[in-house]
Image 1 (spheres, rainbow, N blue to C red):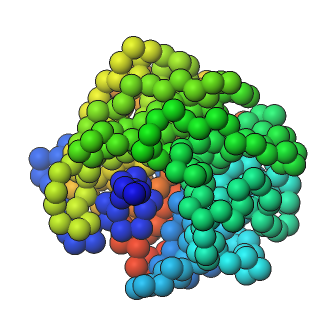
Image 2: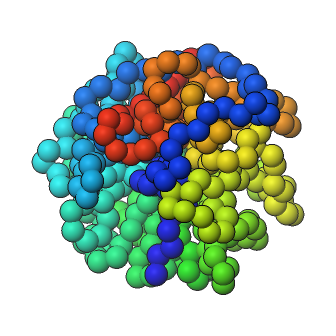
Length: 377
């Protein structure tokens, strides 16, 4: 049985559906601000959101998610392209997908996305510079096959995490995307993988959650020809949404600890954890109710920015910025969205800039729209 996915970007999870928006508390310290700016992402049909983003440079980025979700409707997949000056929609009308979960790319003619089609099994899409098309891979069409995240390394090798046949694992594709194979399954039972990131060609890290008997704990593992599974990240129903590995003894993981009980839509607590090669350490996030959804590195490869959602003050988007060995809460721009919710943050290669994506409110129902912010170098 699949557990409820307590990670950022899941429709209805941590979104305050039962609790509604909150106002800033007087006892919450005033956070710092820095030059994040909202960038229009037009053309989506409410309710819409962007779940993940990937950038190949200042003039090229992709963002994916879903649109047209209302009531029982499953909605439709949504994909946007940044050309250096504006976001535009890319056509998906020839494909029958309800949502896209992740995207990765290295150049204008090579990007990959994974998502949910109408029917069984996950789909793999390839961008050829002008359109998205489904790509063949071993296991395509299998009932219950799930691919949740994708990453591409500097050699254009493709890494996709998910599950097949009830076991968590990774699908690997060569640089041309012509030869695919499933790596040996992750040696952890009852596990879910929601994120895959590349540290170097041949070394990838995955994050998610694993059963601990009465709930679940955070899961982080490394593949470099064989699996190395780190000790569980302890917590009360804690899942890892994203991670950044600067080295085997310097890994940051972010997510949400759902806690015990509560009404439907109950927000959890942000989880920020560091691995020093020996043990995990929990680090204060700077706010206590909400979630952390994405993490991105700087030009030196160190973890630099984290995207999140602060339930106690939803008037602006929320980030954590690395200041030496500490993390500082930073707020996004005021005004463009009533209560923005961020699902992801990524760096822009070759610059000191960053992108983030999400939706204009924490409730994925009309009139919520797709939303992006940019921090220029």
